[in-house]
Image (cartoon, rainbow, N blue to C red):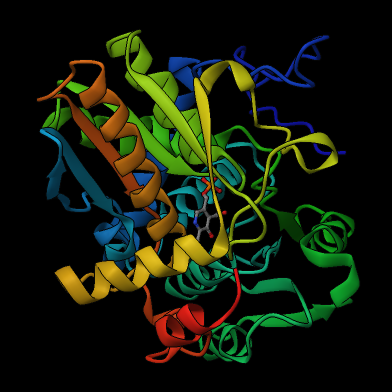
Length: 353
Ligand SMILES: Cc1ncc(COP(=O)(O)O)c(C=O)c1O
């Protein structure tokens, strides 16, 4: 077990209390602890200027739906191509603040179990800061992912496909041995949500203070938790909408039962919209072909969910309202999948549904 406690502080990051309704409760970060993590993150960015490119991603206007405005936050514009740069930076900063990551020598190995974007973000940021990185990944994820991680110098260890991402997470948990190895634990450490509370949400409020709804797909749920806590402090009426995979969408999971991450607290989610993989991929192709936006299938799912919500708002007389939708990553890393295949639509049309 990892205790998410900060060294030399009276403010423990212990927002995780069991409750009969939710396994865990998550609350806004204590300002003192957040300020120290933020200061560490800024210092890391000073050390490796590439990391100054994390955050401040564009919020672009998409065509309105029945008079409801849609704005997309393009998280693929982070240096490693996804929103995970934000959380990896803050999780490393938190490890330093807790005194569990050693510097300058011998450097602690940073460890995570992941099937995708977090591993890529960790490999890039670890390289930029000079930390060794060890990533556990299910053996059946795309070859590019293994190659990309190795290109950044990370050690990548395949885990059995049948155990899925959970198998990779368990190997990472077992490798946790500070100060030699530090497990980032994105599904369990509330600092994941703090990163979005401290960066993503203020960026949204700066550009769109009248935001009526925030729509984001769920993996660890860190994005939704962090953004929701901040937006609802600004305006309790903001609606926070989770996009769940109806079946299987790459990078996403339904946060229920034993798949519920410890940082997920249902109180911060107002409603759920389910999207199928097929619908998500079709919407992702449309984003590329209509707007030149090359993003991953979870963005397609989020866009589709936002359009459904917009239609509902219009029906309820809320024309002119603004919906902000999170586009988590860029599309280049999906080129070897069937997401953008030119024949995908024809095949779909020809196949029984
Ligand atoms: C492609 C993609 N979309 C969305 C998400 C969801 O982000 P979060 O983990 O903050 O819920 C993830 C990460 O898990 C992801 O890899």
